[in-house]
Image (cartoon, rainbow, N blue to C red; front, side, top):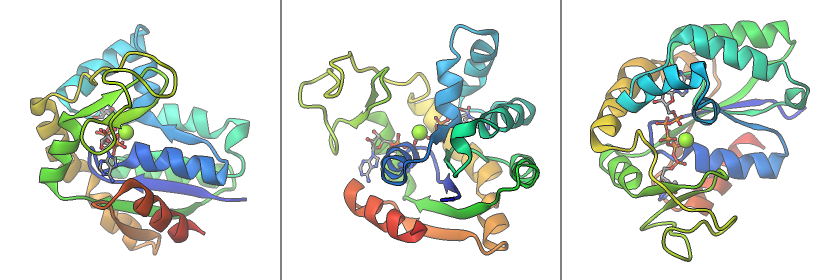
Length: 212
Ligand code: AP5
Ligand code: MG
């Protein structure tokens, strides 16, 4: 049993980048609620969620709680998983505790990836993504060929919520709704702070040490 690892951190802090690397190292699933919602595009749920996401608002708790309960019940999560972007509110965190208790599992560690605001905005304004899940940053982590994914050759594009207005709102919403989870998990003795302002590999090694 590897256990369940939560990645907290503001938009652009590197949750997705680090969760992917850690999932490969630990061989457990990477569950990104943002990715699940984006993949639902074209369905009623996905299109309703996109209205909140494009404004940088949170999708209602009831939707997310049902989604995470369903995902954690799947067999591939039995040895643990990496939660990227869930929980984001106190009610979501309370629901997660109940779901894990029901499944006879627990939270192993909560990693809080800390990055100054000005750096977050720089990172997100130059993020490019591919439909295959790869993520690039035009300055720090560019693709070999402009506009083309190194992994699958697909066309890179900008996420709908990476507009300056949406990014600024996502940061405000993070501070209001999600930052209280830092004290919530610190009081449970589960929190480890990670300096997310260095290089991707260096941070990945620090995270790996924190969960080993
Ligand atoms: P989500 O998709 O989770 O977005 P987010 O939290 O805003 O975070 P991002 O994905 O933008 O950033 P990240 O921390 O993953 O950083 P990344 O690794 O990409 O959620 C989107 C929306 O869905 C929410 O706003 C909400 O509407 C909804 N939602 C999702 N979950 C929800 C929930 N639980 N409840 C309610 N609503 C929910 O890195 C960013 C960039 O920086 C990339 O370009 C990357 O290449 C680069 N980078 C990464 N690390 C470094 C580094 N060390 N140095 C330099 N560049 C770096
Ligand atoms: Mg992400």
